[in-house]
Length: 181
Ligand code: AR6
Image 1: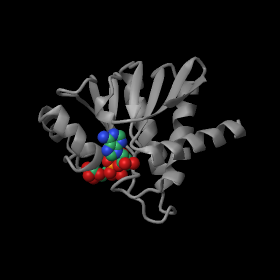
Image 2: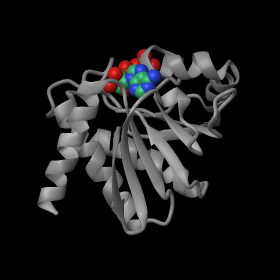
Image 3: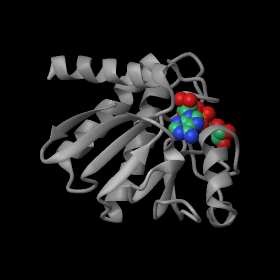
Image 4: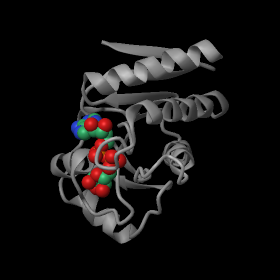
């Protein structure tokens, strides 16, 4: 089960699944500013990837909200982990939409710099950071689609949604974006 759209010869996919199982060139981690392993996606990536990822992240130090940094991927199937820091959701009026868009754009820019063909994202900020799925999904998809439209790399972006509720929220947001364009 999945959804796929083409834009300027590039592909956006929505799938239900586990980000740590993806064999794309990079996967994105839903990280925190201190790059210290936490729960959710972050915990799963460090558990499966092994200690080298946290060791590399520690050398980088801090990553401000809305930014993204790259490490290797330890034992994971992917080559790189791109650690993106989404905003903690407060009230939706504290710059969260811009910071969320920035986190996606920054992660995509790291992939572009490395000329990666494919990258997989989890739904940033919608777990521990409390961003409502219905608000986050259109921001994520809009940001990804405009990047794919305008840049050469990456050529494939896969949104990996954890569970049916997240998948359906993103599918609905994509249908609504398609109607507008
Ligand atoms: N694969 C894909 N998506 C997943 C997986 C998985 N294996 N596990 C959870 N999700 P979260 P955040 C979904 O909390 O909100 C950490 O402690 C989950 O259902 O991982 O950005 C960090 O260290 C949710 O929709 O990230 C930070 O401190 C989405 O992934 C903080 O949490 C993101 O949930 C970051 O919070």
